[in-house]
Image: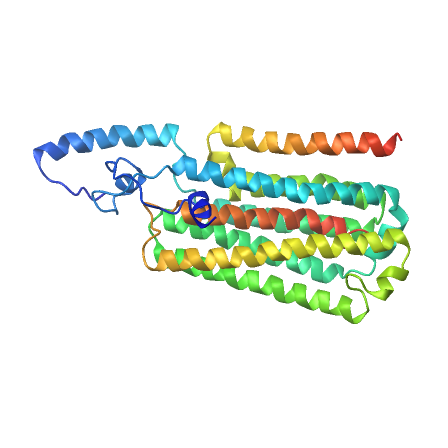
Length: 230
Length: 119
């Protein structure tokens, strides 16, 4: 599993020492001999993984679409319970974190490690801010007796119960992805710091960035489905 | 650019390296970094589009607000994919791969809806 993930993320493993015609040699910052890396292959692997993520969330979007079509009125009534302000605030936070992420990749490509690390830390900070806002939002719901399996939720009309079920599952699964993304970014930040990821070999940072942008992408769809529906 | 060798042999290597470089630039995914401004402008557009969706949902709750969200949200997604996720500068195969994944999802959704709407 670990090896699979390492390959997926483009981590260098024990590979035959081919001559350095790769990217490292082009960038001019690398030593004369670097292990051959399949840059395009690493990125293709990441995209294939992202497609499975798309289909995972796609299934949930499909369930949402069918039930919203069946219980339109109940979905609109239940959505009034959600805080539009917190949903939109988290959208701004996540969009900004996506910006700092892509800036980090660009900075490292240019050999500017300090900027790359700074923007990476900003991304981590914003990801943390997203989770704090999310925790606050869920906390308010819980204090109103709205949590998975609660008595109050069971007494609601079926359509409203389904809406809250989907709300907790989809934002919860997304929140889990945010946590995974933060761990991944922290690992990559460490590697950028100690120079194992650098301007000649940055595909790990780029793939981590792709994952982070996917998290942002999914939230872009969650916002209108849950927070702007009333 | 720092060239590690400084021998006559290395001149040949450098020339070869230059050839390899142009080949990489055209055939591989090693696209040159974009200016920071491209990403900052995209971010501004994403923030503005979010404001449009939110404002529409407040001013015209219901059908119009939903319609605006259904138009603007895919535009935002496309901006993230093309600019932040670099699809715009990747070889075409990456865009085709992405479109096939979305196409598969669309087929699932289409078939499911045919079932639910006409049963």
